Length: 369
Image (tube, rainbow, N blue to C red):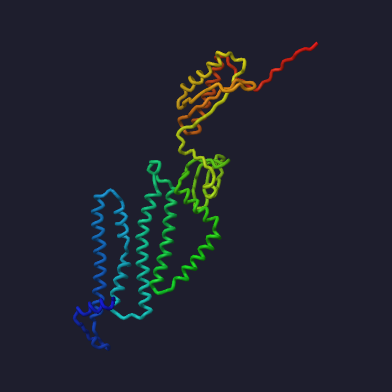
């Protein structure tokens, strides 16, 4: 097909000859045709690039989506080297090149074209990862740095995979047998997977953490008996700063199989207070205690009483259960409310003459004559 096209072009051109020293009269028609095709293709490719970019830029001003911006960036990313090599390859078809030179030239052209196609594909992959992974879920205008790490990791894996397929494609089109190469890569991949089973398990666990997002950087979590603030979610491990100040390193696999309590999105805290009064407390005052508790919580800002009940006749006390909510998720605010209630309850009981109970035993002695 290429030779037919070359012959057709040569048939349209007049024979141009030039007298050269030593060589004598030489036909330069092929050289002129090759040079014209080379320059014409470069100009054509450049004009197409400029025209397409111009049209897309004009269209992007009338659309709300940013996909057209990605397309514009991908087309702008086409380097002059790519279409220059393609034009050179077409121009050299006018000449009978040695088999080795022709093979090398085809390999270089395929490599550059594959490289350019991979760069274009990565533009769309980066757009997809940024759009679907790097989200501002809290609405604060800042994406979670953990999702940015996941986005870069996905892009890196995609780049490696595309280059692997691209290299096999180039070698195959150069006439090199790639079946054994593919088989070797498969066997080597299986061996590496077995050798790095633990690392790969943590790697896939990190993807699970990125996609499911059970917690984010900055969240306060509890894992079993350990608790702390998440500082970093890596490929293999997650770093947690505990309340004691040390850094706790936990494997991602463990985090995906353990029960994790996340306090970050807590909107309020629930508290339970239990206290007891002595059996000697008059019945009328025992009945007033529920109302006293309710009035105390009405006077505390940021607190909401859920219920209070006289629940148990214990061994040495009449027990009351109080359930309340702190409207702030901050643990310090919760303790402030609980402390304010305790102080006020002690003051009210002192005014009422009600005593708190504590473990006591009363011994009754009887004289036997």
